[in-house]
Structure formats: C-alpha cells, structure tokens
Amino acid sequence: MSETLIVAEHLRGAMRDVTGELVTAARLLGNPVAVAVIARDPSRLEVTYEGVDEIVGVPVEQAEFENDVYQHALEALIAERQPEVVLLGFTVNSMGYGPAVAAKLDLGFASDVHGLALDGEAVIATRSFYGGKVDAELEFPEGRPVLLLIRPTAFAPAPSGGSPSTSAFSVEVPSSRARHVDFREAAVGDVDITTADFLLSIGRGVGEQDAIPQFERLAEKLGAVLSVSRPLVDAGWMPNARQVGQSGKTVKPKVYLALGISGAVQHLAGMKTSGTIIAVNTDPEAAIFNVAHYGAVADLFDVADELEKLS
Amino acid sequence: MKIVVCVKQVAVLGDEVEFTDDARDVDPDFLDASLNEWDSYATEEALRIRENAGSDGDEIVVVSVGDGDVEPAMRRCLAMGADRATRIDHSGSRDPITIARLLAPVVNAESPDLVFCGVQSSDAVQAATGTALAELLDLARVAVVTRIELDTGARRATVHRELEGGLVDVTEVDTPALLTIQTGINQPRYATLRAIKQAEQEPIQLVAAGEEGEPAYRVRRMFAPPKGEGAELLDGSAADIARRIAGIVQERLK
View 1: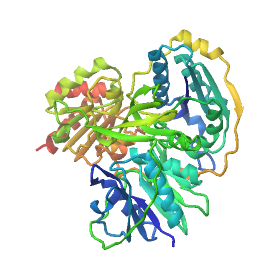
View 2 (view 1 turned 135 degrees about the vertical axis):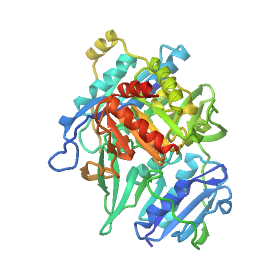
View 3 (view 1 turned 180 degrees about the vertical axis):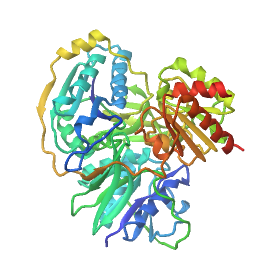
View 4 (view 1 turned 30 degrees about the horizontal axis):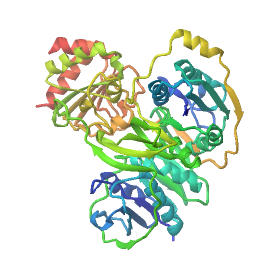
C-alpha cells in the first residue's frame, strides 16, 4: 500500500510542533498518513492530529535522539512499509540522519522544502535557492521513494483530533557511534527578548562591533529592546540571549523593526509571526521584505540617525 | 592526524535576477561567488585543532567539487593555512546526494581522521551533503557542531550539537568521524595579503569525477518567489522614512 510516512520529532518527552506541520504537508499528497514514533516508550508521546491514519510505535532503548538509531529505524520502516514519500522536519535532528538514509537507499531527496504539490502522480516540491531569493520546483526520479525535509513553520499544524489505528514495529538497532550524553540549556541573558512589545533588531548590515552602542542608545530612546540576528552573535559582539531565529529565540512582538537584516530562513522562522514587521535594508531583493509589512530600501545608518533625532 | 575539509564556492545573487532560457536556473551573469561562510568556520576549526595539538605533522586537505571557477574558494582556504587542495572536476547535478557521491571516493582515499563540512551552504541551504557523505564513507557523524573536544587516545570526541532554541546536546562520538560545523564555533582568521598571493601560486590537484548516478532531484522550474501580501514601501528621504516608521510604531504600540 502506498503511504506517506512521517517520523515524529520529540525532545525530552514532548512532541515538537513540526510533527503536526508534517501531517498538514502529508495530507496534500492524498495517500494514507502514518506517523512513526521512535522512542523508549512510544505510547507516552501523544500524536493527536486530524488526518493521521496510523501511528507506528517503534520502541528503542535510547530516550533521546541519536542519529544512528533514527537512521536504522527509518531504513527498516521503509523496507517494511514501502512508503511513496517520507517526510521529516528540516531540523537539526533530521539533518543528522535524513540525508544518510537518502544516500544509502538511493532515494529522491530534497531539504528545506516549503511547498508541496502533486502533478498527476508525481510529487513536486518547492524550495528556495540563492539565499532565499528564488524558488524552484523540484521533481524526483521515478519509481523510488522520496524523502523530504520540510521547513518548520511552512505549513500550519494539523488540527487536533483523529482516531488513528496503532501498531508496533520492532527493530534491532546497532550500538550508536554518536551518543547523547547530556543537555545544556541556552545561556540566560539580562533581558528576555521574547516578552518585549517592541524589538529593534539589527543584523550583519551594522558592519562592525563599534556600531553597536549606537543601536543600544537608539533602542533605549525608542523604548525598544535590542535584539540581533545570528551573525552578530557568531562574531561575539552580542550574547546569544539576544538572538532571534531558529537557533535563538522565537519572538512575536507587536512591532519588529529590522535594520540591516537580510532575512535568512532561520531568522525568519523566529520572527515572521510578529504583529508588525518593518524592515530597512539596502538590498531590495532581501528576503526580509517577503515577510515585512513595511519596507524601506535605504541605508540603515541614515534611517537610524533620523530616528534618533525624532525621539 | 589528517583532517579533510569539504568546501563549496557559493553563488551570491545581487539586487537583480534573470533566469536562463530554459528557466531551470539563474543566469550566471547575475551571480558573484565567495567561499561558503560555514566552510570558513570548518577550515578554521581544522587549523585550530592542529595548532592546539602542536603537531606540525598534521595535514589539512581541502576538497571541493566543481569546475575551475570554484578554485578561488579553495585558494582562500589554502591562504588561511590548509596544506593542499583537491578539486573534483564536475559541472553537472548539484544536489547534495550527488555531491556526496562525488566526494566520497576522493575523501576516502585520504583516510582522514576527521572530516569537516559546513552545516549548509549559504546559497542552497540544503544541510545534507555532510551527513550523506558520512554514510557513504561509513563514518560516525554529528551534524551542527559548535564545540569539539578531541580525545585522540580514546579515539573519540565530545562535541556540542546545537539544537533549535540554542539548546545544546552534548554528544560523544567515535572517531574517525565526520562533523558538520556551525558558524560561531570559532572566529575564522583573515588570510594575510601575502598568504593570499602565495595561495594563488599553489597547485590544486585535479581529479576526474566518478560515477554520479541518478540525481536526487531535478529542477523543473526556477522563478522569483511570489511576494507575500507585499511589504508597503516606505520611500522618500531617510528623514521621511524615519518619520513613517515612528508613526507606525506609535500606532501599533497604542
């Protein structure tokens, strides 16, 4: 039977949002939807999404994600169930094993997929190239399963509900070559950017570390909290606690004013649901303008200087 | 110890874009090139491991896939301090599984102790080549690494795997291993002008591409993304823009 197989993502005993988003994506393909839960005790992780036909519990010894375990389990599931399409989240965990499964089994493959459609029987995936500035429709080799890593937040989570059947699938997993030891929490900063109503957010466009105090002053004058995109944290100019994006904080202020942020996918994922997004960037094609409500193609320093004069 | 660093010269698209006649790619005239940012961190990490170990005998080899146009990125790594570079001559499919297949025999022939790849490339953001390559080399691997502590005697490393939200998964990995390197793991050094000049003279070993097999995907159509609702454009002078922004902020925070 042809089906779409999803591998559920969970962390420290909780299902992650992306799992519900994968269900929405899977339903676009029409086939029955099965969700595999690979966990020490799969029954403790609730999969309650409308549109799921079957939940496949895959009990393993490891409580947390290890890429060898997931790879082995997914390969066994594919051999047993022969799905037409396999959907994983485009997440750090999936990056550790999804491409390995595709390489080993010679599957069709694409990652960071944000659109999905059928053309007749064929799966067509949409993803971006060239730094998010262009989109492309991809087609896949005929006659083999396609493994897709779906961009988090690209699809709305499936509504809760459903009355799926459940089954168990046992798999012998070899010992892991990369073993989970411990979790370390992200550093806690002096401010919590997730609770601010107004974020003034700066990015690579500020150019140098010496420019940062100017924006700290501007934020204070405007009554905003200063946040940043990843490159400023990578450079060691600002602490991780101020970082907006997938590897930083997800924020939803009333106003998000982005100066000199081009809008990498991982950044957009962390702020695109903000109430009002205003972006200033010199590049008119910057991806940030695709999510902004208001945009200005201008030099951020000129605008910052004028904003400072006003306040 | 030998470390192989797989690097990519990425395409940088400027303010304008036009597509090729078959609409399957961007017209190359509209592209600039640079060393992938993630790969500069991967190269730096390899250099640091060598320097911290104080073992001059360690070798750092840069490998890339592409035509002659990708050599500047490789030379940038040589200028940073890598010892030699091998280019796999190829100008066909660029899906990550194909690239991994082309890299595999060349990396394998080096018998490296560690293989580094950037987490992803800034142009394609596929985050897949490294993990696919690890599979083809039958190597232990960890993706999205922000810290490496090697225990060479015990043939293992303790690494930090950076999860969403900045949560760190401390992972113990057997070596040899392939690690995909995240930005921020270090501060990549600038190559000196002198080193850049010297690197221009260094030979780059050329090897023919092996069997590439069927691509993992084909581009059917490439196009400018639909603008969402569309940002309302604020134009005029910087002062005009600032006044509009101040007005919008005031309105929304009421």
